[in-house]
Image (tube, rainbow, N blue to C red; front, side, top):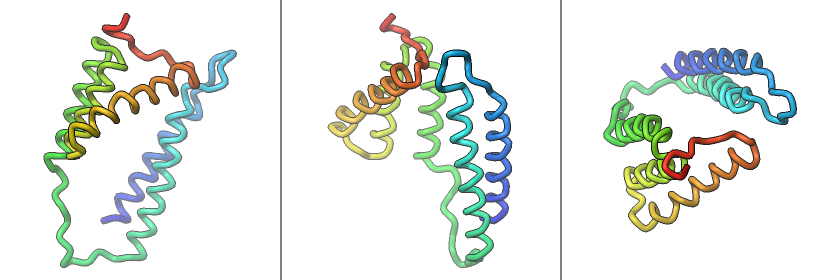
Length: 144
């Protein structure tokens, strides 16, 4: 099963990488819109190949019971991502991202103090990376 999933991920990564390489940078921009998808597609392809090879070399043990695919943790992360997608244009990246990071830490059983400290720092770092380094505008929402 791991070999099949590895091949599927490798093919998906190759497709993403192929499409991302067709995105040309805008004039005057050092980073184009295809940078992040290229990284993701390349990583998916590479890790898919690794998974396929590992699945081929190490056969599945029929006695191993696989964990359930859908868990409360996974459902919580997916629900949080969906909420983030809809909340970001209204609340803005900084507010919605901080709330999202807080929820993820809480779902991960990180504790209130860790969530309060990590959330604004992580969101601020991502905001700084995208706005100042990559020159990508993020939704401002409530902050105008």
